[in-house]
Amino acid sequence: MRPLHIVQITPGAGGMYCGNCFRDNALVAEWRRQGHQALMVPLYLPLKLDEEDQSEGTPVFFGGINVYLEQHFPWLQRMPRWLRRALASPALLRWAAGRAAKTRASEVGDMTVSMLRGEEGRQKCELDELAGWLSERGHPDVVCLSNALLLGLAPRLKRDLRTRIVCQLTGEDGFLDSLPEPHRTEAWRLVQAHARVVDVLVSPSRWFANVMAERLQMPPERIQVVPLGLNLTGYPEAPAARFTPPVIGFFARMCREKGLPVLVDAFLHLHRRGRISSASLKIGGGCGPSDEPVVAEQKQKLAQAGLLERVSFHPNVSREEKIAFLSSLTLFSVPVQYNQSFGMFLLEAMAAGVPVVQPATSAFPEIIQATGGGMATAPDPESLAEGMESLLLDSKRWEQCSKAAHHAAHTLYAMPRVASQFLETVIQQSGN
Image (cartoon, rainbow, N blue to C red; front, side, top):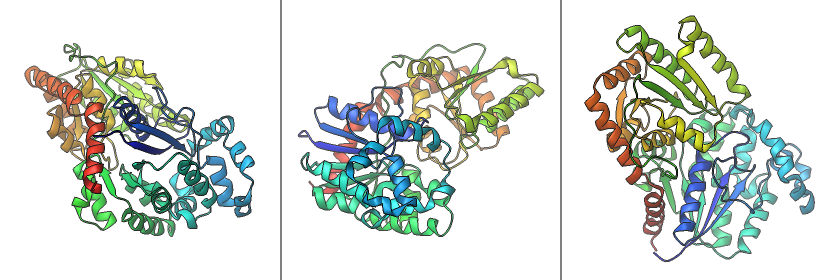
């Protein structure tokens, strides 16, 4: 494949870590290593990452403060460019990022619709600036949109840049469904319309491709499947020996949506069953102010059961600390409570050779079948506990799952392979 000029457009997620940000950042880094000219463009807010930021030196477009002001004070759409850039300064956006972490979908329905309207929305001047800035840097071979909420950019960028537009699909259905009416219906209408403009739609799993094909009212084969990839730097080259006593781990945002209360309940059930009374639980991941009440509830529940001393909490750790955390586990589970298009956290655990026990929902059975790196159970705490117990008591099966998980993460989902597969899919599906 000849070297390509690629533009990756990715929204920042405020003060919280964002799975899409990690995915896109790792893709851009790998494309650059492979000799492509890849540019990463952040939207709204700076990216928060635990690895080298590939958007370093690129201005933030659609600055979060500007987008908010233009939405609520339409006359500010005529503000001079110097003021718009000043309001997109890193210092101001970092301040805005602290507030963005508390934003709920129910509060941004009008803004979501406006962004999806693109040139007809209240942020048209921001789109003008982005399209002009990209045009000055030549016509890219591919423009990649990080998610379907950015589809309002597609018609203008396709016209001005005369390029392929690719959109990744990564769980937008839950956000769109949580918007209040009439914004929910209008947002879905716009997403459906703009999805027909892009050249390639990419889902990380066949399960989610089928979900979105139905929601977008298009044939399933219109959506291509390219799994997520993992930057394996720092992960162990071989799976570790089994830990005794066993350590069960959770690594995701410490919130209800990610299933933290469900896993704590499963841990309590595991101890009540009495066959693995020595097990401990390690809980890691992002924890913001809005998550602290949920964490406090779990600590109270564990204390009442006399098991708090068996549980440790590791919030907001570095990449190196995360890898060390995962490498210390015997089993891993994040029983997500919503439709999950893939689950990068599973790849991270598998890369450390840790088998997973997941609810048989969303894309989890697909991943487990593809890797052989664990087992899927019914989603209730009792079934999760039973699955954990059966795997912990069967050392031969645990070892097989550990080796299979590690092998799959370091081959099928290694970033060099996935980054190449992504571009090959784009070129093939766009016809040239």
